[in-house]
Image (tube, rainbow over all chains, first blue to last red; front, side, top):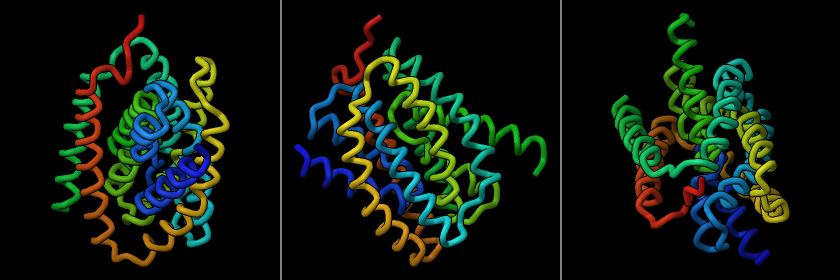
Length: 116
Length: 130
């Protein structure tokens, strides 16, 4: 199991730093499909792993002078409140409709980034 | 920065956090476009997004811990292994031209959108036990 986890971690870390995301988009499906965790354990374990990944990325980008602390607080602190809320709701409801909604939102943002 | 901009940034931050809590991601896929819209360059947005992810995942993990869903050993192995991957990712991101990085990011968003749609169609990855 451990070699598989190391491989997954390496790939997730690369994605995370290259795109400035947590890497959960790589971690969660691999934890579901390769490691065989259930949905909630996969997302919970992913969040914990991302903490380490994002910290490493922040420090490395910090050396290059690319991190803007004020802007990070502006979006990151409301997001912490959102994360607690999202986690609480996740225990109670099916997230099918929300997944489709977010999916549509991402397509719109992708279009905007492509054209801007 | 106008009041409207701040309110929008806070709302998108909240949405990113909800996404993080629901799907176990860091919220970066919403942080990065939000930060670009606020005027940061793609590379600054990505670096700043990683910092913004820290409070998000700390709060989400803290909450998930109460439900006993976190596999700590698995998370630790994944996290430590990811550091080497992150070093490579930072290296490549800083060398790529800004517009290439932005378009790659847009492609990533489309991939994530497809994945979310796929996950929502799967039988019951997030079973709704009342």
